[in-house]
Length: 157
Ligand code: FES
Image (cartoon, rainbow, N blue to C red; front, side, top):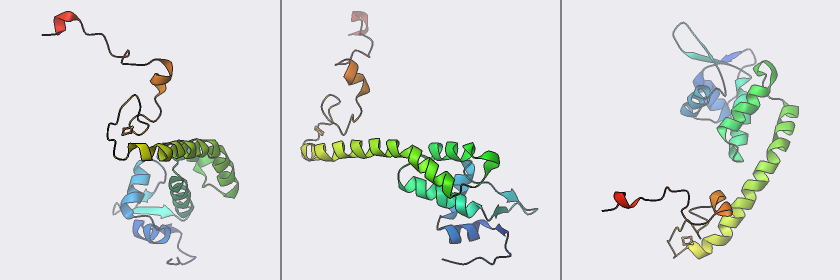
């Protein structure tokens, strides 16, 4: 990984990309989503403070375990004065995300266990198939297509 001179207080997008391992396009996307911020030079070039490195590392680590960007953004927004997350912040946030990750792991386990049935089937039934309808929230309350308005006879040819 390229080292940055200690005297370098601001990074170009290329330097941030090289140091963080995130593509320039990903950094632009993170910035558009409010996960990192930069100032613009008189030539309209982005400059990031060094703590952007830690924010990008935080975002990438959270993404790697499947945390949605909106959740990551909300977590970063909770930090006072847009402070860069430190070790304690990461410990607190990762603990809070544990139940969400456990739920996702359980759901993936269910999908894995039913995948064998689906291979070669191809029905993608909304009633029976966990691949096409993994949560089936409405199906837990009612069955069939009762959420659809009933067709009136005048609509039918
Ligand atoms: S594809 Fe038929 S049950 Fe999933």
